[in-house]
Structure formats: C-alpha cells, structure tokens
Image (tube, rainbow, N blue to C red):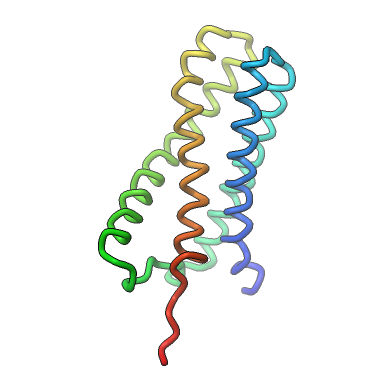
Length: 149
C-alpha cells in the first residue's frame, strides 16, 4: 500500500510535466519547428497516458479511501476548490478524445484541420494539466488534514 500512497505525488509531477511539454510544444510550433513540436506533443501525450494509468490504479486500489477536501478552510475556499474540481473533471474527460483527434490530424499532415481542433485542444488540455496540479496542492500541501489535539 505504501507505493500506492505515492501515486498522487507522481500524478502531480506528471501533470506538471505535461503542462511544461504543452507550453514547449506551443512555443516550438510558433517558431516553425514542426518536427520538434510533433515529438514534444507526442511525448506530452505519452506522459498523459502514464498519468491516466497511475490515476486509475490509485483510485482502483484506494477505493473508499481516497482523499477528500477538508472542512476547515473558509467556505469561499471550499466552493472555489469544488468549482475548480468540477471543471477539471468534466474537461479531463474530453481531453483524451480531443488529443487523439488532434494528433491523428497532425500525423496525417492535415494541417488546417489539425490547427482548427488544436485551438480547442491546447487550452483545454493546458487547463486540465494545471488544475490537476492545483487539486493536488489543495489536497496534499495547502490544506492537509488537521491532527486532533
């Protein structure tokens, strides 16, 4: 069970890496470095697949024991957290589909169609990656469980 409890930290790191790769991939395509962009984005997709496997493993093995947001922060903080979590979860369900379509179009050199969908995929994927790190920070760093005295 000890290795399983490390998975949230691994997942946050993978989300952080995905965020970095998304930004690097964006910069590379703006610089016209198509091949570097392609490999960076494929790497980002690979990191996201590893994240998904780790995330599903954690939740399968920790069923009924996963971390919940504590009650002690001010209500505006709790509401903000739950709004962020809700948007994160909804958009996270969309990212794999958008990413696969975007990658497929890019690999098939259908550039116009690739650009059109990437304009949606990129900001949604970036939001999901960033908020994934923020959810982790809220649960494990900013608002840890309080120890009863």
